[in-house]
Image (cartoon, rainbow, N blue to C red; front, side, top):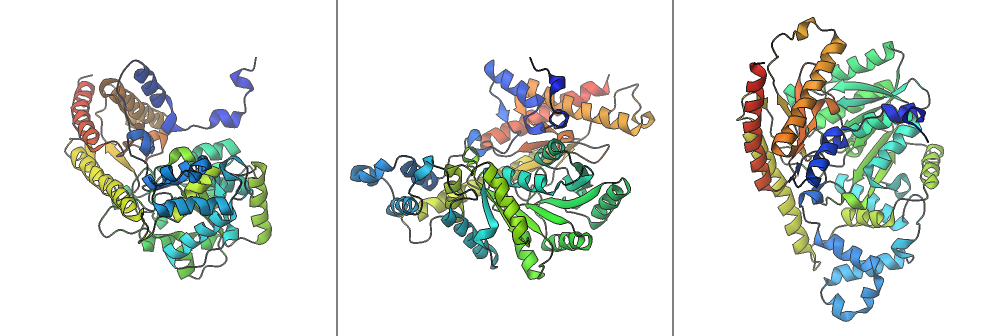
Length: 476
């Protein structure tokens, strides 16, 4: 029998906090009949967000095409969606049960290119787009491709989404963390980037790419245009690629804030030498189709021989799943004015986005009323990175600890806090140490995806719990 010590050390090293021990314990409690409020992961439909009708209607016709021969059934579907399903089957007659081309169904890749052109007013080429099983597979393809030597590393934001840290560990690369500026709305600081880069170089690590998540996960920040321009300038000066995680581009709530794509900013700067990888996904935005695992990777400013290697890599997995490819098509080519399905699509889309905006406000307002907690209203995405303070137990002197000991002490504290929160309130959040945080600070990440009444309950329970937990620590 294989034992754990026979497994790949890189696998053992990789950690993925959003589905870690606290979530495992939440699932155990759920089997005991507890009603858990899962705020650990951006999984909208698991938190009662209804799927958009037009996506499920088109998919239903494609998964069971015989319905297209039944007039009494089609009478219940908007005509434009029936026509859309027939068009898809004409362009991809094999349906959903057969492989496609490795890089994806051609007309869907073309639609993704047209989506980028319409969004940004720039040229985008079908040939530079690969359809993937969610954005995660696109990210991992880039990481794996660029890690040539053991000392190669990726600059990743701190806090970051653990897909990056776990995948880098799994592939044998090096993490190069750069701290986001919490005091400045979690924007990127050029000074922090420079410090991170130079520190890595001094340690013998070779930075090969810079990861940017915009809007931010777990911070909810939306980067300004000036910040995006600064990042491009920083990367160009050092000749390192940019990996832009832009899966939350539709999730912008703050007044005066706007999503600025890296592709558009590249075009405005006439940047033709620096390589850009961008990913998008059907899992986020207002679709929330996480289970369909659809997305795309766009490669910009890469020579044909490099593109060919990415195509080869995708070919090894044959292709991304077909339902996910079709969901990606429906994301980038939604109903248009004049379509029978358009009015319902707009109503559902706006209802979801307005609801997320309101829940972000409720969460921040409630958190900021709790003594020892603080949170700026999330500007975008689906998450909040809540900062909290805990009293130091009597007899404990963090100042007398080594840096390693103190970081371990702080990690134990935020993990214990989140586990206790789960046990006592049925609220499942993720400790800030699972994402990375500025030393000597404590945070936890929560989504604001649950129903509004559940967010209101969460805030009330959080206040009661935090007051009791800190009071107990103070008398220890």
